[in-house]
Amino acid sequence: MECPVSKLIKAIAPVSRKQRELAQREELILDSAQNILHEQGYSYLTMDRVAEAVEYSKGTIYNHFSSKEDMVCSLCCRSINNLINMFTRAAEYKGTSRERFSAIGIGYSLYHQAHPMTAQNVQIIKINAVREKISDAKLAEMESLEQRIIEIALDVVKEAISCGDLPKETSPIANGIVFGVWSMYFGALILEHSDIPLQDLGFSPTVQLLWLNTQKFLDGYNWLPLSSDTDNEAMFNKISSDLYANEIEIINKRKKQS
Amino acid sequence: MECPVSKLIKAIAPVSRKQRELAQREELILDSAQNILHEQGYSYLTMDRVAEAVEYSKGTIYNHFSSKEDMVCSLCCRSINNLINMFTRAAEYKGTSRERFSAIGIGYSLYHQAHPMTAQNVQIIKINAVREKISDAKLAEMESLEQRIIEIALDVVKEAISCGDLPKETSPIANGIVFGVWSMYFGALILEHSDIPLQDLGFSPTVQLLWLNTQKFLDGYNWLPLSSDTDNEAMFNKISSDLYANEIEIINKRKKQS
DNA sequence: ACCTGAACACCGTTCAAGT
DNA sequence: ACCTGAACACCGTTCAAGT
Image 1 (tube, helix red, strand yellow):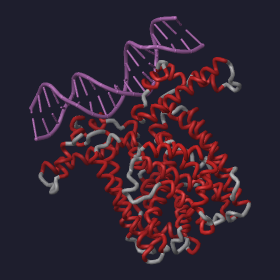
Image 2 (image 1 turned 30 degrees about the horizontal axis):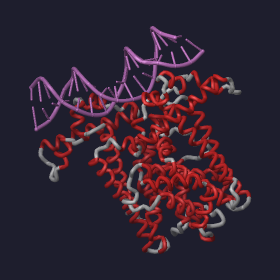
Image 3 (image 1 turned 90 degrees about the vertical axis):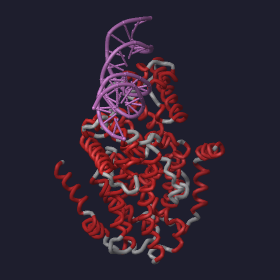
Image 4 (image 1 turned 30 degrees about the vertical axis):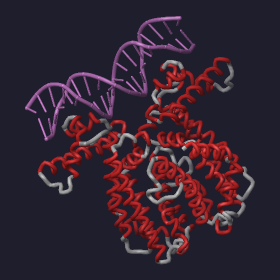
């Protein structure tokens, strides 16, 4: 499945008028799709509705995206890009290596807390039956973004090792640490937004739990300074207000509404 | 959506001939569905194909399950039941509280390694758009099974606290530990079976990584005896061969084939 | 060269007719 | 009382016709 339009847009120097218009329309389509998703849920997201919302025909949508799944994958790419920005800021945060790594985790959970529909997209994209229908090009694009975002976290781990905050022996399993927190956050994310009543199961709010569990996990790896030598609550509050004021605001706004 | 048949089967003392036949047919349907899923993947699982495989009409399938999602959810329930059996054995394993808790984790990852399609079902069921279409009764059934399986793990944590293997202060967040490993395993499971080339991302095989990360996590919580005082590889091998010979065999068989 | 929307294929679900 | 399968609704995808 080739998308005629994407070839044009992706041309290295993008900027003929036509190309700008196409790129703009693609954003319009994605915005509309996100809107429908946000307001009516995934079951309501159909190509007909998207076409109607953007006031183009379905054929035109298919000039931009080779399939519905391709479109949803593009939404995911936008989210990952947002996360890359947040992670980059977190990695450059002034503080210990451990604080910066923790800041990445906080960013991840707050972002998805602020944009629950995004979390669902990510989840849907991971299903094999869905993944099969995404064009190779789009999939490659997403995977390269995932590479980059992992790299950001991995770099902080490597830094911690080289400055002695983490034991030298950790070096061969540096990516194990990243995978550990990634899977923990990802899993928690899905378990939370799946309408499973976590409270009924006896679990307290996810963001806090993730924070605590991350600290214990990093303690287990002996990432200095240990949480027993730190005021963890203060650290959480400082990081989240220093770095993620936007997300906090969105989350609070939603809380007020409900 | 009511399922006429389920009322009959669920009658408290099940055993008229008719009821037995119905229960048997329900198993047949589920077996067939699982087969299609296993051999052709989720995209091939349609109600038509299931009906054809069991040699009943679609209407009859709908007498057993109120929707396709309901059927898939039933498959999930079967899996959770299998897991409950494994977890129960793990919790009764002869060894320290930490070994028994670890054994539960190993069981989880080996089960899903041995039955990858099951992992995908679980994943699909967690999507909200899918969940909406499951009958309340079936959803309640699954949630009660989830309750039970969590309880098994939670009991081991509580035991560890009361016998001093875990610090007394852990008590109020006992379920935090369970949630931590649950989310870590669940997240890793999805990330692994989503065709993301974890190797390319620099990650080593998931089961080992999960094992290592679990140990570090439990170390962080100071669950005695610490992994630094233990031969972890030997422990992993002992537990998996003592408890999970079946799963290991299935996994090895698959490896040989490919 | 690009856009359109009717037409098609597929699939989940229902229900009137049959036994 | 139970089973059947034709009929329906919905939705993703295509492509001949139009500009």
